[in-house]
Picture (cartoon, rainbow, N blue to C red):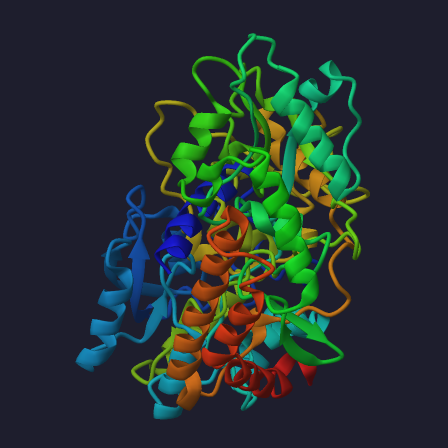
Length: 559
């Protein structure tokens, strides 16, 4: 869990660097100029007394919510006055739990999903206790943009709807295209050119390329110092096994689950999994995989990609190359690393696909302490953040400060998409703008919204990094299995949550540890395979799949 939380923070830093928030085709009911606070149909009469709202909120170090320009914009637009209970990111989960346990909790919680939020189990537990209010009626009456978005996108509706049909909170719905195919491989194409090699298409092609990188001195220094393939043990596609395994059997790089004809199953006890391990072991035995790829963190991985003595890395696993090589202007190594399409193996050419940034749970909830006036004001505010203007002001910062309208000739990230938003880069040495709600403001960012941001066409210019990732991801799109187990949309019965969590942890650890032992030779794939499969059974794999099947069969995504 620590790995996930730390790497989630890394992701959001990268995410905010390349593209912050996004555009949708929902109806924009907000005022034309958000900086003026011009009245809109949803704004309260100016003469009315502001609605005081108590909100538990997480605040980044570069924010001051009380003086924040987006805070002031919401207060003016919706005739409200926030009374924030502000906590820092450190210890956020514990502080939220203490707040709830005290009984003296506020009217609402507005959180940052990648730091801490209400889990699905939390939502069911506190929803059934009456601590959290269902939002269904409020959405029907006061949130036309949220309602329209859910009608348009069944995935969004299933993301926020509990098995009992109630919506106990709203999460961060971000369809990050390049994030949705995290397990990419980036190869040194300057080395391919120097050695007169083609981009590998199959698992065997890839092995031959790595052999050439190891033996033929592509960096030209006369030393056998090349590292053909490396990665790390953290998140965001940096583990080397999934990309390689996908030529044999689908590897979700999370829980090793597959969905076949509507039935949940594991990939990790199948003959194809054994074949994949055999292939990966062959690479390891020849010294083609850096042993550190199975033990090192992101910092150590980047030291290989940015080796002080000269370029030594042949291929690196990662959602994006900035994980292991600098992409700043003037960095001569960045453009050398380009994406390898999914490799064709004995059983196909698959690509790991997930929700693209969807974190199960909710970042916004209303409690039973909320007055009717507060409920209405808050749901209208969140509804505003489901519009293009509102979401951009919230997640990116205010118009004219952090973003502007596109100019003639500027193009959008998505092909054939009309550009709507151009970011205004920060200036070195400039104090924090304190104009948006950063991660706390991320609510609704469907793919068409993100695609509408202005991006230049030079993919090796760091200013256009998102286009580089977008174009790379197009190589992976469509290579996922027809059926995918939607872990992000699965609500497990609260009575089974603890059992499922323990089973998940034990099984996941066992699969990963055993895979490493098979690859490094500490276990024998011939002699020890049957015992390994038996070990999965002893860890109650069958019971784990039974719990997940029940949750899947009752999931809103199937209704």
